[in-house]
Length: 91
Image (cartoon, rainbow, N blue to C red; front, side, top):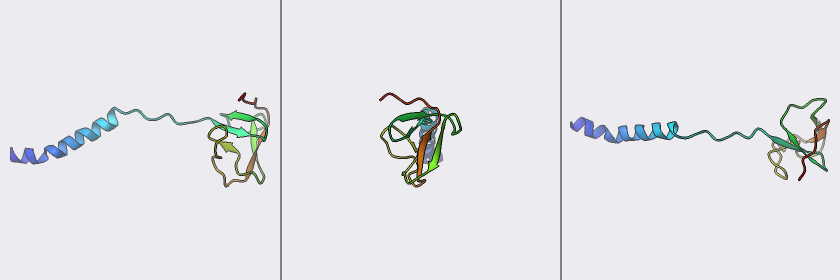
């Protein structure tokens, strides 16, 4: 009985850890990113290509953004967003 009493905190911790993982749902991962051509914002949810967009070399700090008027996803790439057929977002 004494041995079981010493292990109760360990069992309680294991039960709490199990409950923490079992009863929480994962957060939604943001998959939409945005491009800005200097005048319009575009929702970019597809790969670059001839009918969508490209990120071309330039002195701009980034090509794609996490949100409209946000920070570039990778500001060190020095690329500029070039629209090849996407429809602008109304903002």
